[in-house]
Image 1: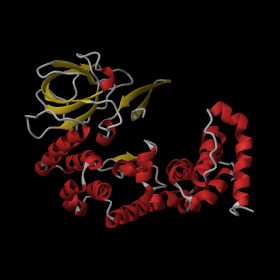
Image 2 (image 1 turned 90 degrees about the vertical axis):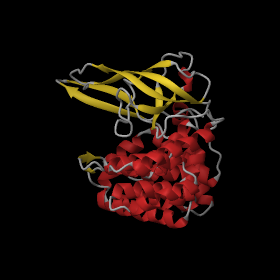
Image 3 (image 1 turned 30 degrees about the vertical axis):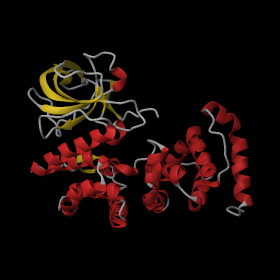
Image 4 (image 1 turned 30 degrees about the horizontal axis):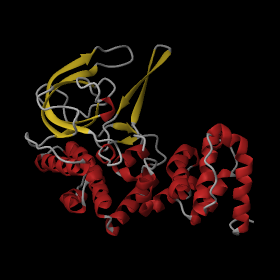
Length: 379
């Protein structure tokens, strides 16, 4: 499976020119420690030095490289204990609120295994706080997850700052076992709505208990109803300017589809949220078409059931105006709609490369239309 790198594109205008800088974010631990990937290198140690980039007209001063002394090798064979590594971080959004990037900071790094050929110069893909200082080597990614959970929950138990509590919960949640997740129960009753969401996400994901799943659905639908049409909302740090839906999905992380078919299927218990985004929410605010597409219709293409086929077919054939014109003018989006219906009805359509799809689109459209007619789904 190809590793998906989540990147943030920062566009800052200077004079009449627009500049773009791509920063790779701290990766989810269940993604980087997936058994289907090549074995990652996980090391613990100390930041010995931080080199900074000079500020420019379009980018503020930021870390460009750190010197990292390896105290322990937790997983992998690409690095040895006692080595000093040059870690390039200019294109990595270092999670400073979770682990400050400063000299003397002890932490755990997960390094990109594809760059292990350069033993002295390896980019990070995840940074994890360390609660203790001595570690033994583990056998595989699953054992590494248990070790990292122990460290993160240890930090959480001592942490008083609410924002860092939230970030620790978010980092641990995707790799918690049902038993480990019980430590989040007190946080699920927090007066801080974002801490509560982070804890609820961890409990729902790890335990699969219906009571937590129902709470997530209720909370997400209420949040979308109240804030889904807003241009921005106040974030967990008290500052205004956060896009409402991406912020919600940062906390209910399992609602983001597309990493793999396996992960998509794990979101099936939350199908009501995607249906809400594709139907009730669409009827309430037609100016949010791209949100409707990305978080509603496209999600139904991936995990919808026969009940959702009329919604997908109607959307494909709906009037192209406003933002929906932009969505449906994209042949890739039309292909996703046809392939989504094909998946649900088991029509076995070929997922063509986009140029080939455009040549065959009318044929696939006719195949889907005939199948819907034969099944009595449309007249």
